[in-house]
Structure formats: structure tokens, C-alpha cells
Image 1 (cartoon, helix red, strand yellow):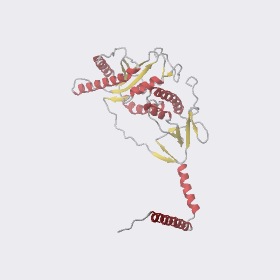
Image 2 (tube, rainbow, N blue to C red):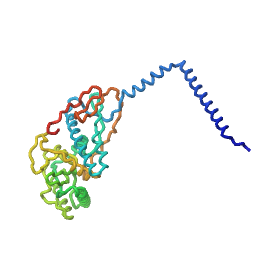
Image 3 (cartoon, helix red, strand yellow):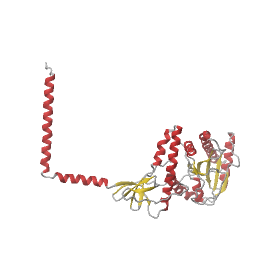
Length: 374
């Protein structure tokens, strides 16, 4: 039979264990000093410091970057950043008032979009939020779409721009109205595709974008499709089918609301189609139209509440797509990362509306906001 240990024996055992641990630690220290005879401790410290400095004095950049010097788009980027910041701060207030907290984080992501830039070798690099309400990200997205689709659309002999819409609605009806018009177009596309496959109808093709305007005077929303087709015949066919589909469900799709014209400038009209969603700056009275010079924003306003309503209704909807044809397959190059040691860091200042060099205080774009825009 094994005798049971009492409390006193346990305490003694723990004391002996602690003593042996203390002896072991001292032996390890002595062994370290013995090694230092062959390699000085201060040399090891220098090696570690150099490694740390290498990490601190380098940074990782991604993508191809944008040119800094003699780049007019840098001023446009600063302007878009200033407008976007004003917009999202207002929309954050709207979301808070409505209790729609799920939109607050994406809005803040846009506020911090491209706040930190890294420049090296005459180029600057930053990260993007890629949200629909970010003016800068929308500009990049437009350029990307334009580069993909312009080579195809420019080969169309008689392109036409078609606008399809229904009667404007109030805010509470906007979500269901957008769902309706997207379903209508899908049915039309599917029906025409089947007719063509059976040899009973023409093939339809084109590019389309979903847009929504806000009428500040009437407090109404007007969602619509902008479509570019290869010829007038296709546009007329789609217009006819649109009116049939809408009237079938007792929606008013009169002749007045639909618009059709020939494309005279392919690139300009393609940009018009892909302007992506909603106008950030709107005319308070859309019935009072006047010709504006480029950059003239007199009388325009940002309606944050309306824009928040539009972007909510657009959620889970594709705003731009093609139908009836496929783009040529292009090998997408993965975004490459590389480490650079010579670089400058820039931080966006909302007060200065520009990016400031962390070390020198120099301004990146030297953008000066227009008095009215401010």
C-alpha cells in the first residue's frame, strides 16, 4: 500500500522544485555568457537593429500606380475626394436618423478611401473602397468599362441611344419600382432570345445601365435604363417590347417617357450610359435647364437624403451590363505586390482638401476648391 502525502510534504516538494528551476535558469545565463566569448553581445544587438530598420524603411505597394507630375487627373481626384467626403458625412447622418446602421460602416469606408497615399518613382499608390457612391472609385470604374466596351461599340455602324422608363414615384415606392423594371427587361430579353432561336425574331444586343434621377421640386424618383444598340431597328424593337410589357401590367409607359436618338459621338454617349447610378450634384429644378460650361456647378446641390434612398434601392442590382454578345476573353493580370525602400507617405487632410507629405508638409495636388463648390 502506497502511503498518502500530507500537506507539509507537498509544500517541501514545491520548494525543491522551485530551487531546481532557479538553478536551471542560472545555468542558462552562464551558457549565454560563454557563447559571448566567441561572438560579442553588442554585435548581435546591431544585427537585430539593422533588420528592424530594414522593415521600417520599406513599404509594400500594389498595382500600377498613377503619375504625379503633370497629371491633370490628380486635381480632379482631389475635387472628387472633397465632394465625396461631404456627401458621405451627410449620408451617415441620414442613416443614423433612419436607424439604418448597416449603411454606416460602408459610408465610413468611403470617407477613408484613399486617405493614405504612397509615392515612389514618380507614381502614387493607394487603396480604394469601390463603393457606388464614391466619386473617385466610380471614375476609375467608368474608365475600366470604357476600355472594355469601346473597341466593340465603335465597330457598330449605326449605334443608337435608347432610354426606357416609367412614371416617376415617391421614395417609398422606389425599391419596388426598380425591382419591376429590372424584371421587365429580363423578361423582354429572354422572350426575344427565344424568338430568335426559333427563327421568329431578330437578335437583340447592346449595353445597358440602370440610373435614377431625383426631382427636388416634386420630391420624386425616376429610375430608367440607358441602352446603346448597334442600330435603330434593334432600338425600336426593344422600345416596342418595353411598352407592351409595361402596359401588360397596367404600368404607364407612354411614348413621351421613352427617348431614342442616333449616337453621334460613341465615346461621349458610352460615358453617358456608364455614369453609374445617380448624379451626386443635381439641379433643384430639373425643368429649368440651361447649357452649362464644363466645370460650372452654379445652382447645383447635393441631396444626401435622396441619394441614400437611391443607393438603398440599387442594393443587389447590377447597374451596368451587356446583353446579346460576349466580350473577348482577356487574361486578367493579378495585382502584383512589391517592396520599395525609397518612398514618401501622404495623408489626406479634410481641412486642406489635399494630401500632405508626412515629413515635409508639402501638398500633393495643390488643389484649390472653387468658391461656390465650397
